[in-house]
Length: 171
Image (cartoon, rainbow, N blue to C red; front, side, top):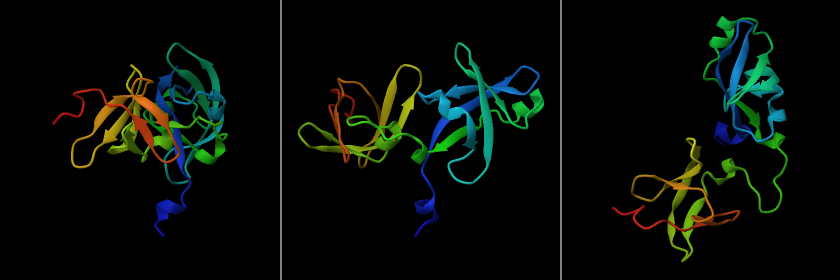
């Protein structure tokens, strides 16, 4: 069995943006709705045992400030810039019926309402204007589809039913 099958699935909940001040605080880009998930030990990779222990301080306009155990000055905090922070997916509460985590969408096949296979989801992104599904059709380049009610009809356990705007997949 491949090693990756034995490792717990982790979700990225934050990324260290930069240092803040001279006492070792960091600014975090937070990707989790529940910021309480960021207090405590977080993994620094999708695999491996390296962790950082965080204590959230307060929110700013775009970030959360956090203290990291063992980091006492700006230089040490700057070395952590760009570090992604993960939790085990098993640590999250189970979603309610009809709800899901975006990470669960990755790998799901995508179909039109006529049950024609489009491809599969290879990523979920947000560049500031809203959530996007990156769809990989068979034999062609991937494309982004806005995750909204107009495009996504239904998310099921084993597939996503969607409507592709005219011209988006034209070759």
